[in-house]
Image (tube, rainbow, N blue to C red; front, side):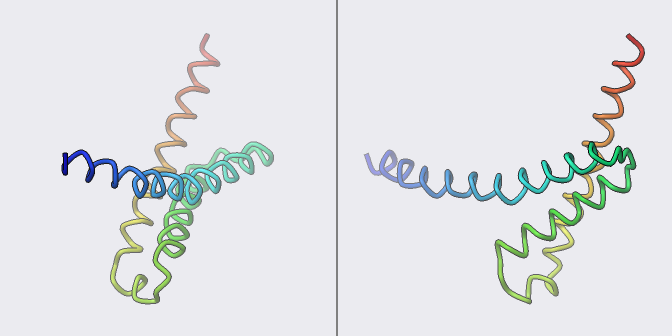
Length: 102
């Protein structure tokens, strides 16, 4: 019974972390994608840079301490955003190539 109570008690914080993560990453990513469509930007550098910026923004908003920038934690989020942006660029490029070959 205690295990069930503990599991239920963790549901609310888990849900809140999920919502905050979506707000900090999905909305800026949607804006970057919208900008790339409006200005017909197809550069891998744009998407990698946007992902890196979103990673830096999200950790800066989550942990509002200057120590975050000196601890190296920002580098992890920037690297993850960079990879995510490149992954998005690669997937879109492959989908466009498949669409044009049909």
